[in-house]
Image (cartoon, rainbow, N blue to C red; front, side):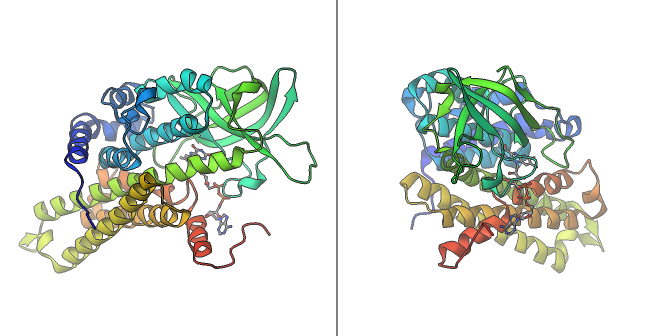
Length: 387
Ligand SMILES: Cc1cc2nc3c(=O)[nH]c(=O)nc-3n(C[C@H](O)[C@H](O)[C@H](O)COP(=O)(O)OP(=O)(O)OC[C@H]3O[C@@H](n4cnc5c(N)ncnc54)[C@H](O)[C@@H]3O)c2cc1C
């Protein structure tokens, strides 16, 4: 086994780390307070090439892999998980388009995503169903020359900014009452009549990432707005979610790493009982446990990315990485608050932001419960999602 990154991967990691330290970290707290998506900062992410990493060179990308992309996302998340999430959702949506889209769709939508001048969204969740993707009700009906979408999506990332480009939107395309529901994924560009992102939610964390409900009211799109084939939509959306799962693991990993670093540094500074906090054995124990969790998470996250690039990854490795990394993200951020004492509870202290930001990671993109069910099923247990 070779755990070393290549010289090129190390260079990429350091380049993004430096950008995150200089450009992102100093703004993260204020962005969290303002709760507004920072278009200018995201454009810098694009200028640095981060959004182009996994795309094919013939499409304008760097032609690198999931691992390189994940390394970059992890470094962004060390500074600001909300910015890392914005990036990874857009890249995930773009990768699905690159893999399954027509030439015309790729030419129209990919350049903006790859350059980081535009954002893509993945619109699955609805107000009445998230984990239970078979209960979505947004429907597309055939009209002359295309399809008319009606319904509502909930909690969708990246759809309502000034650079939002499209939402890959899942809708039922079978007749009402059909024995088997068929779902289809549509590329719905922002500005389409009848498609309206709603007001931003007020959120506990990820405050500067854009999250909104989406409304489809007789939203007519042409036949060629279908991504892949009619009836393949759930499969394609799940592919998008699975890709995002690797990156979300690295979002939590980066945040856990930041929590650990801040805890070590605070423990070495803060005076207590005639020495520093770091001299107290119970604080040492807490920090040692944090470090073990971060390292174990890193191994699972890197394995999922590495196997993704080799084409050998299965739902089990993805679920293990997503489950463990996001869970320990919350545990490690919580421990970091403990190390920081009362100061850790203050909004001005970064670790309190980490704690709030990571909370959604065990829920979104397949909750911890769903990941555990997938792991159990992969081990041969009889797991059923439908009653
Ligand atoms: C900030 C934010 C951003 C988001 N971005 C996006 C996005 O870009 N695109 C998108 O499509 N969605 C997005 N989501 C939605 C997110 O993916 C869902 O919230 C998530 O999938 C859970 O669905 P739900 O909220 O409907 O909860 P539910 O599915 O109702 O689940 C509620 C609880 O029940 C548990 N549960 C559900 N089913 C089972 C089961 N079979 N066995 C055991 N426990 C179960 C869940 O784990 C959870 O704890 C976002 C959400 C937030 C808050």
